[in-house]
Length: 122
Image (cartoon, rainbow, N blue to C red):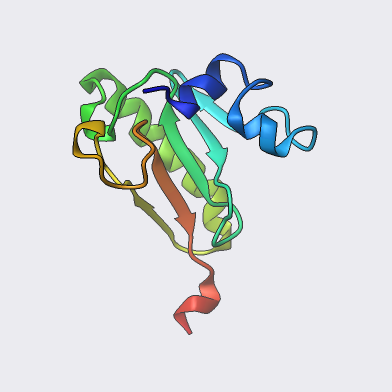
């Protein structure tokens, strides 16, 4: 089964994302640390919402090699300092695998980082 994130990393100009949103955005990667990238989510609930994911295909963050976990932790901390200006940051992953046919139907590890607007807590 083709992976739309892998397709986007291989050729951002020919990806499903580019077909829908080009010429507005050619490449949506906004930060990178090693094999990890961050990009804005589509249809953000709150400003600054990001997806953090490996550029190599892994179905869930739990399946990342142990060597990538320190990079992931550091990368998340760095990103939280930027998007956290909009409010407290929460992180979550659907965690579905292709074999289960569940979740959101995207079987490429992607962690959602969402700065929840401060006004939501009043």
